[in-house]
Image 1: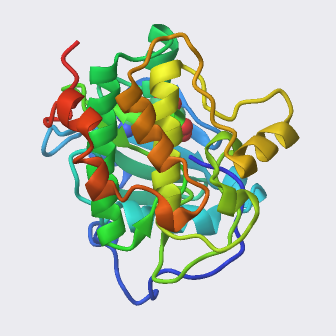
Image 2: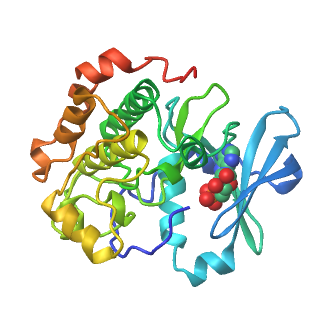
Image 3: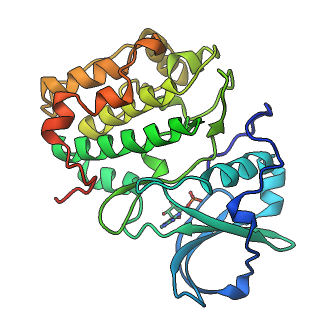
Length: 293
Ligand code: AMP
């Protein structure tokens, strides 16, 4: 889960009852299996729903820690948004329940784990693999934006890999459901666009910027505006100090796409439907979204 608290109140009217609230689950409905990982607020376990035998990931969050970090509002929003999204490249949130001390999220199980680890292992991805992932994420974000959901925190740590090798956007902790332009500062520094660094209004084109940063990191193994000091990263983002190192060798077509996404004026960023038509995507991406390495 993403962390820091956010103060604005917006999004949907509270009268809208989420699908997640329709069924009352309890811990007794699940057989708990091996731990899958540990997050800031709790643990994630492999689990099986007893009646259907459906395998899920059960995320267990401690209420005390959520309260202490003042992220209850953020979690509520995350659940509300994620439970309504249905896309092959977005991790499903099937439901939630709670007891006195904990909140449990019933999540789709991403069998191949974290993309972040895969990128660390490979150092950087081939152009075919990067383009396949980027086009699948662009389709998922087009779907989100069509529902007026901005993710705002696209980065390798928030992506999981499904059983077939397809990417799943997994963390909606910073997402918003909005019809308005917004001013909130959120997300992780390296992936923040200039308009969020400078706290001016932003809209769904923040996700195009982050996808451009991600594309760069897939191909080079490091994010484009990385610097030793936070202040230098800020400076480089605001200037759009984009440089392409000579190694690893990356095609000019990939660099062209990245340059069209990392544009300071958010209205001039390559729209996501145009990204899908870019020659680099057309020539390299597997439309199934599955990387067959
Ligand atoms: P999080 O609290 O979301 O950061 O999750 C902690 C760790 O648990 C992640 O880094 C993953 O390794 C693992 N994990 C979380 N959700 C899932 C999932 N749906 N499927 C498989 N592994 C997961």
